[in-house]
Amino acid sequence: MNVITLHSDAGADAGAEAAYNSADSAIVQSTPFGASKWAAAGLSLVMLVVVLLPIRENWKAKPKDDFPLSYFPMFSEVRGETYKVTHIVGLDARANRHLVRHTFAGTGGLNQVRRQIRKTVREGGSANLCQSVAARVAKSKQTALAEVSQIRIVTGEYKLNEFFAGDRKPVREVIHATCGVERSGQ
Amino acid sequence: MKRWLKKLEEYWFAEGPAARLAVLRILIGAFALQYVGVRYEMLVKIARTDESLFAPVGVAAFLSGPIEAWLFEAILIATLAANVAFILGWRHRYTGPLFAGLLMWLLCYRNSWSMIFHSDNAMVMHVLILGLTASSDAYSLDALRRARRNDLSARSRWHWRYGWPVRLMCAVAVATYSASIPAMVCNP
Image 1 (cartoon, rainbow over the protein chains, first blue to last red):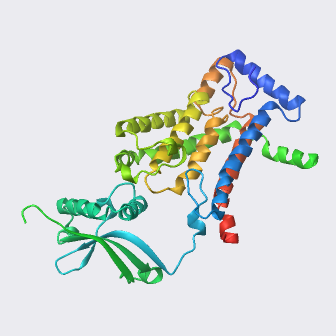
Image 2: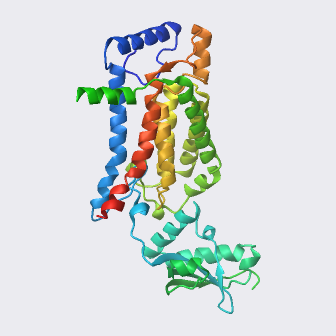
Image 3: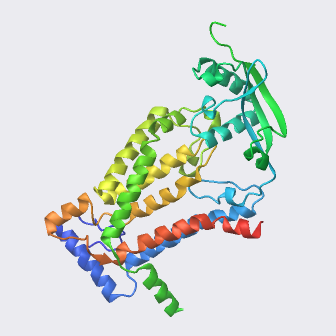
């Protein structure tokens, strides 16, 4: 007899299945709250409490996000007029700026690479990152990057409203590293 | 108090059809399969990322560093295999919890490279609920096997066993995103 279970596949053979069904029916009919229901109620309560536990992070001095239990900081973060982002800039001989995609710095999607660039710069690895991006750009066959002769790793501060209205110039920019793009045959 | 608890019990353990829970298993399982499947190459590449960017979260937090890339790929393949078993409802009593555990580990590891993707949370929790409950009593190889042996068909059967997991999935989805409400309202 299998009573305290959340699965129906309690017994592989016919006898076990029949015993299971009859036992479960008997519990439901004879007692108001059987052992199976206690197990289900316990699991429900535990899951809900665990999912809600990260709420505590909102009141901590140094909140820590986690997975899959999160306090979803992006929904409660105070947004300013400007936003800082550490990114890659490509420059040609006339100092025109070119877009260098995040894929030149790493893998895992835009947001992951953006965070990784920020972490690398924070930990003093901007020169290495710059060299690695420059080497990849040098090998790239993208025509849009053919004129890029210099790579910079920068932290730019942008006014969000103006940026999305078309003015892509940063309000402030800190240059962390600069390096040349050395193409073979040059 | 007793009356209130009785009402709660009636609500939480309302009877539901086995087929409803089974359809959720198939749909969510199929979503997870395409979600992980189309990211296969990317996930393998992520496992080869510079270890200085490794910041383990969730069940991967016990790791002191990244695991070998080949081991990660083996776990990824095992997850996809368990995912197929989950959709088919094959030996669900074992493959259900196994898939839920593997998916949880895989996505914790995937989120351990300096960025947490919050869009994965609800899927992991829902697979966990479906993996631990009687979601393969209909539209599954298990149900087919049982029907052949016993001539029992659970597809049209209604039972509280099939109702509460759906309630829990809804409650977990609401609770997940409610976690940010205090901060938005109280601004601590």
